[in-house]
Length: 162
Image (cartoon, rainbow, N blue to C red; front, top):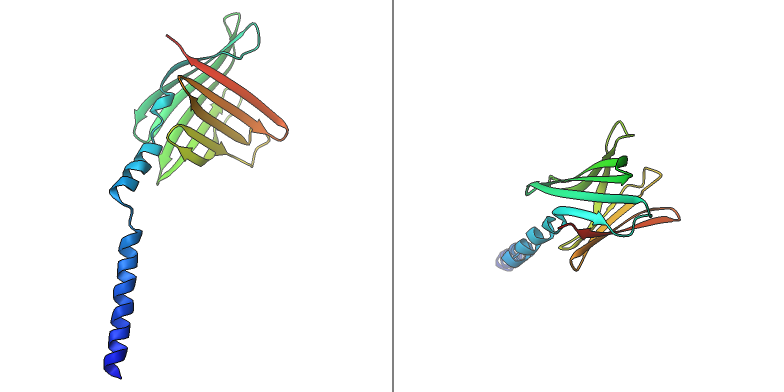
């Protein structure tokens, strides 16, 4: 009886050890994870091509390192700056966030990434009025974005500046 009990416990132990090993990510899965955490497709200088007549909106993105990207967005009218925002995409403890600060705000606003793919990301913050959701995605050689909250959605279409 002791022998059967020993064999049963040993079998369960070996089975559970094998299950744990199978749960470890493969090298391909590790590479895929690294690929989805790359925002290099955002890099460069962009001009909004669906802006109101008389205004020009730009975004410029730079890679600081593998865990931080900095952006600046601004809108001009007759060469006067109407709005300006500083943006950061930052990874901390395996979690990516978009941090946005406008001139009017004393503190930056943090948006948690709720979706992250190799050519798209979605960030949310339900604690503020607007926007509650920010989405960016690569569209061929262009970049699209939306900011939304409640019934309002604002689309952005950017072309790379030459």
